[in-house]
Amino acid sequence: MISNEKKRQLQELAINIRIQCMKQFGHLGVGHVGGSLSCCDLMACLYGEILNVDPKNPGWEERDRFIMSKGHAGPAMYAALALKGYFPEEELLTLNQPGTNLPSHTDMNRTPGVDMTTGSLGQGFSSGLGIAMGCQLKGLDNYTYILLGDGECDEGQVWECALFAPAKHLNRVIVFVDFNNRQLDGFIDEVLDLGNLCEKFETFGWHTVDVADGNDVEQICSAVEAAKRVEEKPSLIVLRTVKGKGCAFSEGNPLNHNMPVPAETAKEAIEELEKRKADLA
Amino acid sequence: MEVLLAKENKPEEIEMRQAYGEALRDMMDQNMPVMPMDADLMRAIGLLPYRDQYPDNIVDCGIAEANMFGVAAGLSAEGFIPFPHTFGVFASRRGCDQVFMSGAYAKQNVKVVGSDPGVLAGLNGGTHQALEDVAIMRAIPGMTIIEPTDAVMTKELTYLAAKTYGMFYIRLFRSKAVKIYEEGTKFQIGKAVKVKDGTDVTVIAAGTEVAEAIKASEIMKEKGVSVRVYDMFTIKPLDKEAVLEAAEETGAIVTAENHNIIGGLGSAVAEVLAENYPVPLERIGVKDTFGEVGPADWLKERFELKAEDIAKKIEKVLERK
Image (cartoon, rainbow over all chains, first blue to last red; front, side):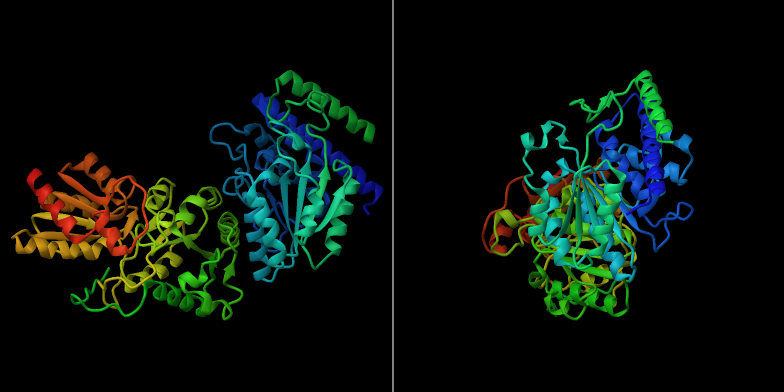
């Protein structure tokens, strides 16, 4: 369990990450709003509490690894990295601009703090498992964290990974599924019903945790603690999140996967977030 | 590069897969971080005997190629040198997106090994004949494509691939080839080997077609034609210097490859000639059709990949000279 003070810090960090997301989208005028905002609370937990990393030394060998397999949520990760000090916050405004180090989908060769290049769904799961295997072979006792989208779980490669990790005893892998229940063409159960994801992964040999409110920092941190207690299996944590969470214009908007964000809309969203941050204090 | 050519008709001692496995074994013994990986074809590539000896290095991923190439990319990101193997058809077609994005786009160091090139897929038939693998891999930026010619070259190129950072596609015939090189030959990635000198025409060949090209040069010698033969074992990056030297000095070129004539060695040579020094060119290869089942020799005849076919193309290109 995290302390109340920690909880408040993480909530504040999550709001700050959303504010930085809005600055990126507002500057560009468009973006993957829904899937970025749904995972901001996880980003806050990872970079504010869970990950053992050093922003001054992004390649530090002993660090925990994090792979954003749903690569289109890059802006949420970039916001967290900037706030953590990997690069200056001003750089966030270069998102998707020619020559940027912050491309739409995460790129290990461009952005400090990004451990693997992703973008084609399903692939970050496999490369993450390869990274975890490599760390294990090197005798490191770190963790490898991977974030999947719910729609991403349609990919056959995800199920190859589901078989692979327990079979190869990659027990220091913790996978999150950002289950915001929507993919581009509609609700998850309309497009391709995933059924009970936890049950499915359990039959594949995983330890699973179903987090009822995946936008609650306390529940996220508890799930990771529970996952770490299980040492003989890899873990999958399903985060029941809300797509576009935290901003009135996007939360509940069925077209929020990739949407226009006029500067004025971003400004209003930031004001809304600032107000919430003040309330928090 | 130091080339020692074997005497004609000297029998090949070992299968190419044995040479490949021995090279990997030697590197594992030297504690190089090489990691042979497979999608349930270790028995086919001859690595099964090593699996228990090197449990930390060798990973059998099961019949899940997409995951294998992804895991390979992750291992590479941690400093390992993975050699994921499957049949060429699956390495290029089934694993294409993973090889492209997690591998090449992410600037990794993965040595993709695709066995059973072209018509040499035993009796597995058209479904298993990699006739488009080179074309697919050529279109991926930064991909080095090599096709070893015999066991000596296979061993050397396996070492060289491991020691050269970057993405490789190694197109590997598994069985006994025709011996071309003697032990001790040193190759250089990107440098063609002139295996026969000649002045009237040049055949640029790769893989098992090199032996056919040498035979074709003998057929033509009897007809008074002097044929130069290049072993273009690096298909990408192509040895442009060798191509242009051949064009300037012999004035006519025939390419020979165990692959579709679209997108492979013949296309690569045509691109260089067309842009720099156009001379008459004829191509030996499978003519944009699917493979079919049958013994390798019959298939070579069926798809006109034999020495006699190359000789006919030489005559044709000379008419156009």
